[in-house]
Amino acid sequence: MKKGILLPLAVLLAVCFLWDRAVLLSRSDIFPTPYQVLLGIVELIQHGLLLKYVVASLFRVSVGFVLAVLIGVPVGLLLGWFKPAFLALNPLIQLLRPISPIAWIPIAILWFKVDDRAPIFLIFLSSLFPITVATIAAVQNIQPVYVRAAQNFGVTRVDLFRRVIFPACLPQIITSLRISLGIAWLVVVAAEMIAVNSGLGYLIIDARNAGKRYDLVVAGMLMIGLIGLILDLLVRSLERFEQVRWGYSQRG
Image (tube, rainbow, N blue to C red; front, side):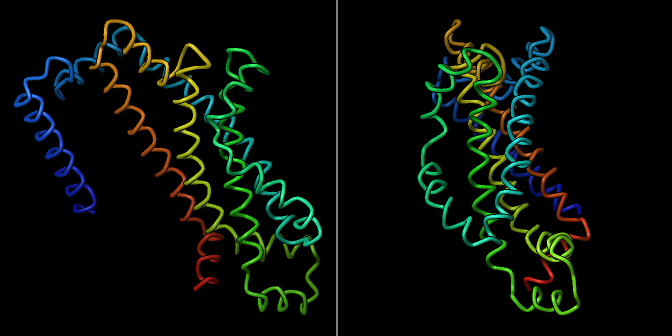
């Protein structure tokens, strides 16, 4: 436990030291030192902007990501189990999946104007396809012996999904949630630079344009990384549930 805290902390301190030395040796009057970034964060807190922008970004990510989970997981389970549905819809999914969420920004602005709905739509799209595809693959890769054993005991189709298929798929679904949440966090920052006038992405582009405040730019970048780390840890905490451990043991 101590190593899990001390080692990352030591690396963080070393990076900050090297960062500070590099700025001083280069004599840069543009790129900030760690201390200047810290002062920038304090400034944002004092003006009430940091909390405002963090809440705005988290709201958009939460709504778009939850919608993607609520749709992507059930659709993935159904397409993974029912082969005719998979054959019918998989080509469409594979056609839309490679399109970058950033490419949808002009269409999102056209449809939803410059408000929260545009980034929420982009986050939904960026999360939906990885979750759906991973869930489909999880269902299709279930060991048949477990399904046949449940069927031999007369388990109904609903109970089969609830007690066998879904728990067996949970590890892969949670992995897809981690990946999709990271993508969603990237997309919201890009969308906020263009489609809205609040959030951490807007903070970065606004600080760059308004007097080249690179201390605030880097402060926004660090907040994005910190929140992304916290979100990843929250999703990983789902692996502690008994149903998920059942799925891991089955795959082993």
